Image (tube, rainbow, N blue to C red; front, side, top):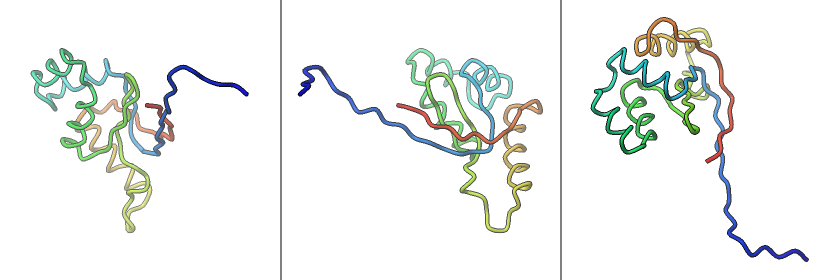
Length: 119
C-alpha cells in the first residue's frame, strides 16, 4: 500500500467550443489600446495588480461575446451552442466576426476553437 504524506490538490478543467479569435495577452492589450474599447487607466490598474481575469469580464460586457482565459491566452467569441434557431452557421460566423472587427480591426482572424483549459 502506498501512502501519500504531502499536499494533494484537485486540478480542475473546463472545455469550450466557440467561434472567434485567440490572442495572447500582449496582442490583446495592444489591440485594446488601438481601439479604445476600454479606458487606458483600467488596463494600467489591471497590470499593476496583475488581475487580468477582469479583462475578460470587461470585454464580455463591452462586446457581448464570451471570453476564456488560460495563463496569457484569451479566446474571444461566441459559443456554438448559442446559435439562434433561425440563424444559419454563416450568419452566426458573420455576426461574431463583425463584432470582433468592430472591436479589434479588420485583420482579426476567426476560427472554431474547441479547447480544454486547466485552472
